[in-house]
Length: 280
Image 1 (cartoon, rainbow, N blue to C red):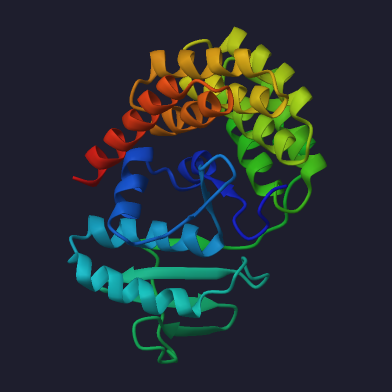
Image 2 (image 1 turned 180 degrees about the vertical axis):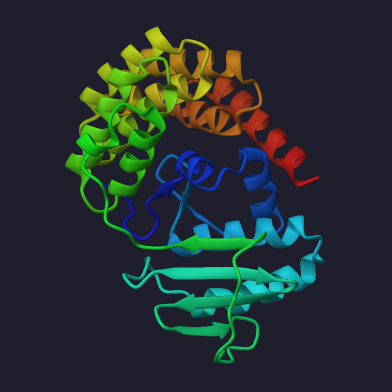
């Protein structure tokens, strides 16, 4: 079952914030955010994590010292709601300080002091999560980027509509991997892994060089207890992206399940080596 408190995957965070996987990993290693782990050891992010990641990235880009970023984020985290408030939330980095506006009120995250008649101008370093009506799938017309953004926005509130948006995007842009990835993960989360496997088979035909398609296919196949096919998909993923640590980790667990301790140890060692390299 999906984690309601941490509904966002690493992939959806990349798409939502426009930050690369490497940058997100660096922010996590620096201690700016501590996401939870899913059942496959993948990162899972909640609303607070999304805000903290984007704010940390903005402050880091402004060359604010790490100790000041950590202190500011610690205070900011205490003020954030668990989910996106219906009144909308605007967060702006101003120097090394962070101003928060929700509805008609605003305060300084660093001190908790309420701000009166203080206009926080949007600009570099701003983080905005403003609630707005979600357009129906038909209104997104034929733009794959709009359809993808629509699917991401709907996942947490209307999975049927999110699925329709992703499927429409696949029809419009069948060679784009992102809709296959998000839809497949969503199908697995609600126990429809058989459908996800079929979806990933189509994705592999259209996007054969995308390692994440093979990775996600391997997870779905494993859930279907199709272990030999799952191993093959993980191995193909690693052929395309040898440093994908999570693929090594999942293969280690899978080989242990299959009773092949030698291969399990080899992939676990590779996973630890990549993790250690990333911390340097």
